[in-house]
Image 1: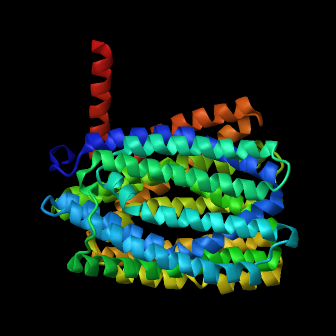
Image 2: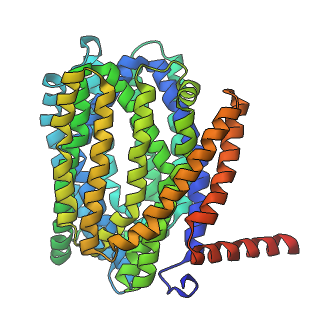
Length: 514
């Protein structure tokens, strides 16, 4: 049972870190959404679309960042979980490799990235100079972020989520302030926004590094690259980077397909809905940040029963958390988007309704991904599904040209996301401890039952509540209460109910004593 789990499984730490991350999320999510509205109003649809496209160019080259990030995070966490390795050796080797890699990325961005910006992107002539400097600022931010990868990985590996939460809150306050300050700028707003965002990113990264140097002794720098460790990290990062290249071709390719077929206006709509997806995902993935280090540590120490329970329970809870936002959002999408953006661009509502389903598939799958990364058996798991997903580009381009309607394109994207998630889950069952049949009964069926009952209840609530702020708040509160009851009654196993009852009993006893 969960009560007797070994040292690398720490329920109290998961609970504490989850609460910290959700307090962070409650503060940051709404500020991020409000900042998006400010940016849209102050930059306009065209300049916001330009900012998104320029970011996509830099994003193409962050494939190197994502690959090495996964590798460094995995090896640092695994080393900490095994309790017999040399953390400083892993840290210094990782940092020195990243120094070399960041220089290569800088060269690629300044040669290939600038060429793509001037010759392959549809940007209005009046915005081209500002777009160039925004590109340079985004490049600087990208390099700083790369150098900071091992420091951020240490915070996650040591599960110091209090520092992560507080620094993230500072960052979102600064981001919102930058968006607000645009209203006081009369000229070159796109360029000034780029300067402010780059400055904020650099400041936040410096804070992370100072924190790590003051709290973790393994950050003592040495010029050393362990050959054996380099080989292992390079293999892991190479596979991850290959996967990231395939993902870049598909995800950034979608941005270009939109740009080529519908222009920067629909680019802006897509950027808005991606920000919505990220905000919704942040609600659920805070739990992943809390449990992911323990998924790796329990695997490293051989605590396989705890490892499996973390995966299944984590995946199910990720889905349940998404339901708290997704279900009321689907029934009040147009009202919420108008409340958020003020002036809602055409097609935004349809894009937003589709994109929440992508958030659901991402959230459900992330604990399984963490389990596979812990095993280091990632080649087929990463390459095959990402290769399959590239098919979304020709299919969506064909649909765009035949229908001339961007709604069909976003539906196509959702369909391919669901298919890819199913394929990746099947491949995961071949390399880690999860089993398809167990997943169906432990995750899929409880989530489906909870969704069906919750949607029915929310539909009834949407009929009897008004389309006002007070009516929407009543809908959220009532739906959340009903959803909690449904999750407890039909979504949880007997062991999970036992643990919750135990914590409730502890809390009530503490309150009674006080």
